[in-house]
Length: 163
Image: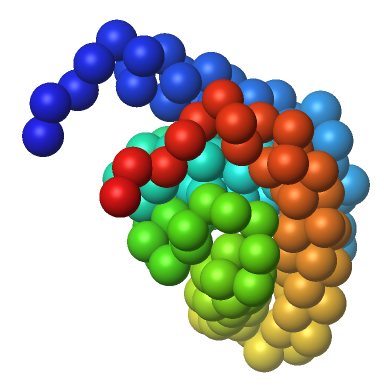
């Protein structure tokens, strides 16, 4: 696969935007290392606009970096895998047209994210935190999906999907 300068720049910009959205637009949850953030918006947008490989890279690397920067290093490897797979799935299943196929792709990706974080929280902290994690991740996913669509409409013409 040939990588060009534009791809590198796009991935860099979307990675930085994701770290910023996680860092500056977050609400701490119980226990201190669990938090709700708006990075989901940028990750979903990236996966749909740039595709599965670039989306997976942005989701994996930027979420892990944000965890390290925010003092949640324990979560960094889990975020890397969970958000990486989530964004790969969204990018793979979507067609970038903002319709039903994109909505199904987002639903599949968010299901991975919600299940991954809920199970990880249960494994790390015990089953008692799982309902709180499930609720928080579900809200984060719904808000991320709802806020991604306006960005997709606004930016879609700048990032035409390759067949």
